[in-house]
Image 1 (cartoon, rainbow, N blue to C red):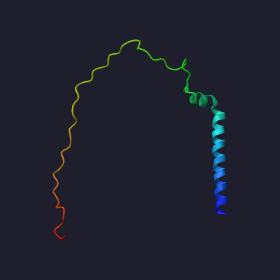
Image 2 (cartoon, rainbow, N blue to C red):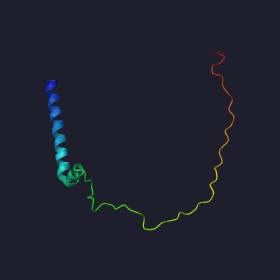
Image 3 (cartoon, helix red, strand yellow):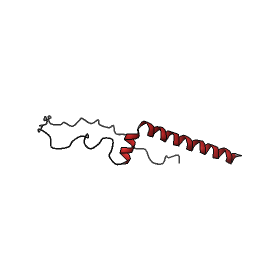
Image 4 (cartoon, rainbow, N blue to C red):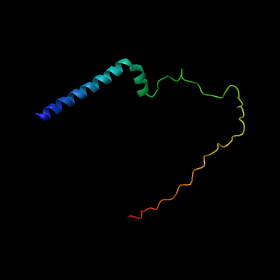
Length: 86
């Protein structure tokens, strides 16, 4: 009886998975198929074009960097690894 219930549950989960995949294909068929074919989300003609920059930009110089003051730790008294009672 338990095996029958497990088989029915597995069949239900598999059917739900196939339904979700078919719904995704129905909504985004073109994007999914073009991605599977290796074209990506955008065709090569409409994608961003790479090339040299049209003009060169100079970056603004920042002032010399100063190190932030670091807090001084208070010297803590060292505790022995074993207490005297041990």
